[in-house]
Length: 434
Image (cartoon, rainbow, N blue to C red; front, side):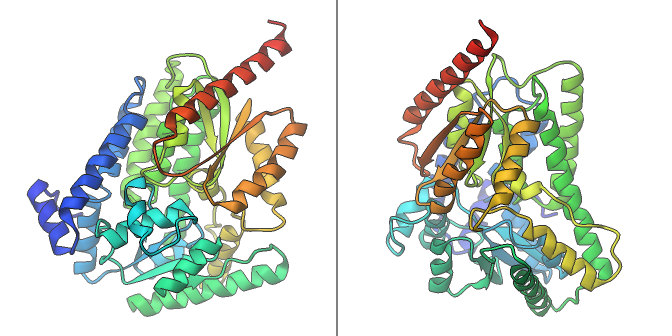
């Protein structure tokens, strides 16, 4: 691990990386204010959450120093944008994966000078940081790997000349074969980049570590099934967000400390909430690090987000890779199959996501579903209608919120959340005759 840097050393590092340090200081101030507003109002947070608050703050500082030291020692790194990138394979080749998805509205205007305004805020936020000189990872990667999960991403990858993994749009046998060939090609590219051959031992190690990381996330989610969850939906989101950026071993250790505290809190009946609430599932688009507006509006309104169905939730941690396979070929195929189960809205038809959401609503005893849709994310926006048909049959009300990374509509969204809470409470009262 890199030695912890003080403020001057951080500024020196950012200068050496070619960043606009003054503008970056403004970005960091904006990020700190946003984090304080979205998270630090909670009174009953587990003490172990301090590690994840620090990880968020360190994502542009100490974590950058760690990546920089890794590269100085001969390591190779790639940037990525999606949970389809098979971490097990890049790790087996000795390549560090750095997720690059932006979640801040601060940088969007800088992307609008090059990219269209009416495309995904995630794409605009991410590349706004790169174009404005406020992304510390811009020069700390040897290659960037995109994927074909949406048109805005695909065309941006074309514009910038990125390596692209072809994610099929169906899940028939021929599509599975296409995806397997892409994963095998990715493995070869990682070997060529690092000069490290992927062995059965190395790949098994990567599988075990990623499974353990997912298991930590899923074990934390189990506590959200309780009548009085010892962790809030907001804090569970933060854990999932920083899991994509933290060193895996450091994350696992911090996650296991949090699990021990959650177990103790649950045994003593300590709730993360200080007032009664309504249980809801958050479904739809991801909320990358820096973006928690919809979750904050929901929980400030008295809704309890008991599970996230998104790519910064269960879609990322669901399903493991078998750990008892023998050959490299078997393991690569198993890794490919694990990622092929991800139920992104890019697939048509997407009965898998519908069925998965039904199970989540039942297991977490959700009284409602919030569709969190990033503006211009047509796949998840249209698919919300399909989900609503199934949820209506279950007697579960829904609310769709379409927004971007700006903060101007926060109060409007919060008022809608309060009204939605009232609807569910009235339905509950009618059922009980209260």
